[in-house]
Image (cartoon, rainbow, N blue to C red; front, side):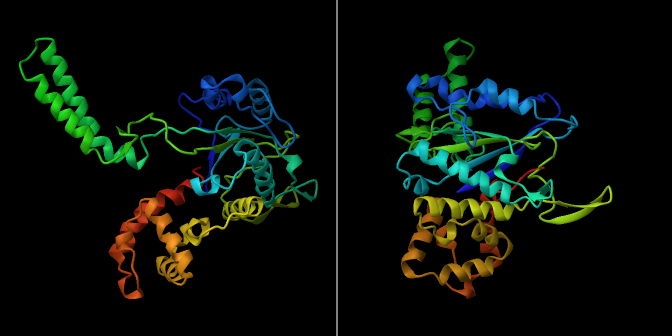
Length: 342
């Protein structure tokens, strides 16, 4: 489970409206039959139109400055193992989203009218997608890039020969291209993985747009707060502030496990991945103390994530700094994906 919280992009050519993001989230429906389209939903309503989402989010920005985010995007990305626990991916994820947003509000150290924030105090709209495409940041694209660049160069050279601008053997160049296509490290269904290619297998995930202002358009609720929990004196009154992101990510995992009977392995937890960066000695110590069957699953999951398993130490004497640095680079991406960039 990877969860990201991202503020609205502002400045430059970015719009103050949520319309562009909503339009982006509608892209999958363009290739679907009407009966298979996914609609926006909130805590109580289904089949909410994109037009209503834009109207409600854009109209809920009282007293926010141009430089302040008007909304935040939360993306919930279950793993393929977690998705296997679902009976009906759309309905199950919709139900899960509504529980996750209860977790979300519970992690604010805020009060509204002297009471804790409730689910009815926030304005959010969510949408489920079932497809993903490879992006430039994916390891498959990055490791295929040198091959892709060389293939483009050879294709350009072929065109110059065909146009008569230079002489050469087109067949020899085509053979070299075929060789590069085969030797590229990452393929899917026999094809070299390229940017924009749809990822195979279950790819269901959730996009959530949550307004910066509360449902009454009065109070600002920012998950981007640098405070986990604090109090400040404002206008002669003590005001609570802060949002605990670590608590939110952990609660979201536990809610999934409880909802779908999922047995989460140690290496799948957010706190374990975070501990790997902060305290690798403790991480490996905990990993090696797992029961044999859980340890086997842990190593399988780590191998599938791209971590260099052959370098994982089997005893404390092998916990060398060089090994830590190699592994840390592979996991930092996952940790960063669970943090917020403000």
